[in-house]
Image 1 (cartoon, helix red, strand yellow):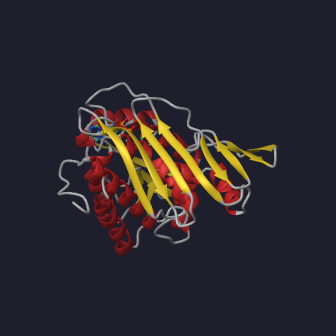
Image 2 (spheres, rainbow, N blue to C red; image 1 turned 60 degrees about the vertical axis):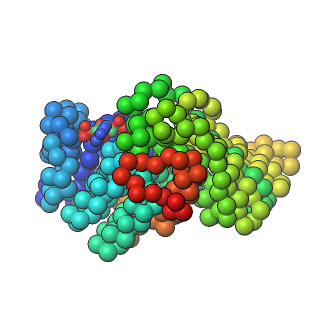
Length: 335
Ligand SMILES: NC(=O)c1ccc[n+]([C@@H]2O[C@H](COP(=O)([O-])OP(=O)(O)OC[C@H]3O[C@@H](n4cnc5c(N)ncnc54)[C@H](OP(=O)(O)O)[C@@H]3O)[C@@H](O)[C@H]2O)c1
């Protein structure tokens, strides 16, 4: 490992599921990233993932991997219910952390992780990959410059048709299931990214047989007068086009959580803005982690920890109204 250039960050991956593989592919495309370790609950899975992605050190315990002195950054890719425990263990072991969304199950856990990262002087970020797409960076600038005037209405939904399986992480209460935390986090993040913190939040959900919200609708209102109408579902598909409707025009953002551009409609004209992503799109958040750590930052200015905690607070409030409580949660604020 000592032959690596000084600027290299050595990554360790916790878990070997779907998103861990997408991230391994992205890490291989970033010249200053080196995947040195992977941990799984089983040695067989660690060996298999390690062979597929050319990772030299393979662990059958997450705890053992975070203790590896050759790991600089830990990427957490377990189901949501384990994020808090995995993040705390990695930070306590002195590692920087990129953790999959949602950062934790609730705001109290997220705030604890944020405080620990700050106290340890370590970098921590929730892996909302959307926020680092070049098209999103451009969109934020264009809306901020008033391309469509003052925003009146923002509409964004993330609806997927995932066959019902009570053991799947989306339907399993024990794993932190439900559309809101898994999918709804994207439209919420999209709205607060463009409109700031909301003044009010309210929503409705259909809670399924396993106790998780399978379909929901959420309305946010903002001090500016803008309204965001958001939805998420794991029971039904809808194209993922977001709409930003201003007083002087509107913007359509196809695949808003991983866009390659957007279309501005204004004064009877149509302008297509193409800003392609690189690789599978996860590269951009990896580059942000590297940029921040190199600059000595403990959080990303693009997605600060306070915003992650604030989004978790919104989701806590919605879940409290819907009666969706995860095992081990003593209750949610306001109960
Ligand atoms: N950013 C994105 O685009 C994106 C996309 C999909 C998912 N995600 C997030 O990534 C996380 C994982 O999602 P995924 O789709 O990768 O899930 P997945 O395919 O089910 O993989 C999760 C992995 O977590 C580990 N794990 C630990 N305890 C587990 C348990 N009790 N049950 C099942 N798995 C357990 C397993 O790895 P080992 O057996 O190796 O320990 C498993 O392979 C979620 O928090 C999700 O929100 C993000």
